Image (cartoon, rainbow, N blue to C red; front, side, top):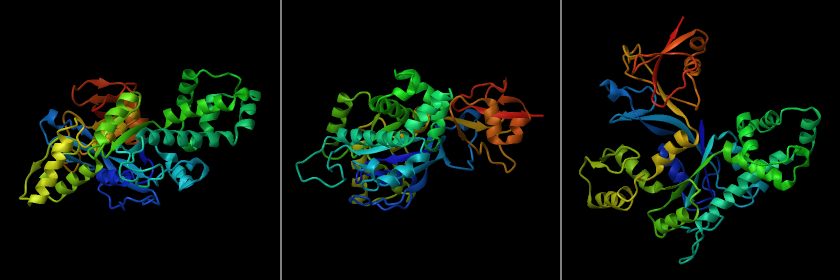
Length: 397
């Protein structure tokens, strides 16, 4: 799956991206630092099952720290979005084209409200309501879907009615480039009260439909970045109180980047997402002061730590509902090279034991007999619904 980082320019998207991936990207406080989309590998954190078996895992992909397994995911940081992007303003056309394949969005906002809608720094004493950033981006994304739909709507709606085609299937085909599926269309039709005569829909009804479709097909979490800066925490609390329906997480991408770089340099022991770290190297006064400031203003203040790891986990496991599944058996946890629990895969919600078999290899799926739960040693049929952190062995004929 692919996570898209979205937001207006100069809110800290590139800093969030670098903190999540430690990739070398340009970071600057001026609009459109990111011209081409940056692609990188981030990680979601899972409690590793190795502890339950009394062993230490050796991952083929990702890594494990103190029995916390970090599983790789794809992240994309795109050019900043400005009002009018759906009409091509700023880098709008490129931005929206880059986002087609994203499964969900993380919107990064500057919760301090220190820059305008174009990402330009405001004068001292001026402040923009952070909610305006959220609102304009939702409007632009909805208009993006709307414009795509309206290009074909007149002939499309009439053809569906004349041929008595399945509307949900036809819409899914029309939006296939945006990774919209038929089940999502069906859910929207169930939840949104609209006229069953599609060709008679007004522009308002079409917008209502595509907005709901955008929301379900590209779910979004909001990273309230710079929460540790001036006005940040106050604005976050106000936003949360006034808009309880929004998916908000306090965030300090700068702090996370500093901690990960310090850990990479061997200065501290730090597990991403934790609310503490351990100094393991003699540091100068400036370095120690900077780290203690992060601990005081961020780590001890928020249950989610810097917020970066929490946001990635929330996007994958809550918004998208993915499941972390470990191949293995109760009798043999290692591969042919002796690596213990070398793999952990992310599978979509609703996946079955048979789906997992096909995921591992087509032949495993075709020759499936049963699965064995490595924890309980119970035999499982092909229709068994996978649970997060399951460990299964696939038995084939």
